[in-house]
Length: 296
Image (cartoon, rainbow, N blue to C red; front, side, top):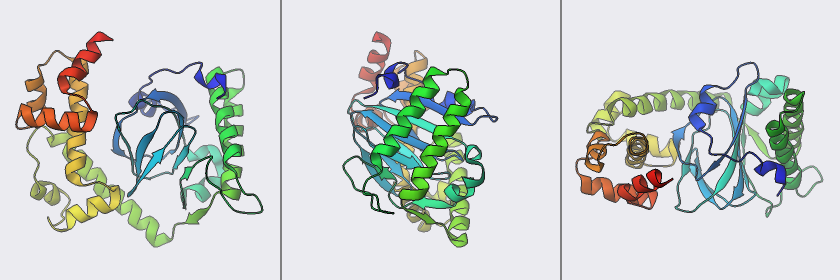
């Protein structure tokens, strides 16, 4: 592994990176450990490059397992989330606005990756070359090192590397154009999910039953579960539990609230249930999680 990649490996905040992306140069890069992030989407293209360990990422209605040096492409508008498998890992996350690709932005945004997971173990057949993985990896490493060094003119160098990467993708990585009907359907689905996620954000402290969440988007209680699972690849119940546990982690990190206070604040009706779900999703009890935070 190129030593330059590891020079600034820190535990950077995803929310910070997303919130302050420079509109004049919409590019963001960070190295994270044991990344956990709930279902979401954004206009930027995202690439995840595994440095160490393995992890699972939900992408639209599929779940992909990434091992060391695997690469996952997440296109604009793709719904994705990071699953915690209890194993230690380290990954590079790169986001960039399609405006950096100028005239080619519509080509990328209007297409889907037939296989978004690129591994050094697989063969990509197309246009007389058998494997493009190493070329993609090389461009990503150059991109990472250029961005981290931030030498004079690095903005131009980063954009040049993105162009080189885009050329490889457009020429050799199988893409499939969205039809107008498919693109319209995707945009409508994202609007519905936006309402669902907002409802959960506003009501997670209280009981949320299937009738409430279905009514919030004018769906029947019979159609809503099929819609949510079909679009995100997970059940709404799993999403809600995961969301509440993420909120619990925030409270456990930031204040001195007791375990029971955090449990009820995050919508759990008993401490026993909270402990069981927390351990199921995070591999340890809330007490152990809190203790580990304060011992750092």
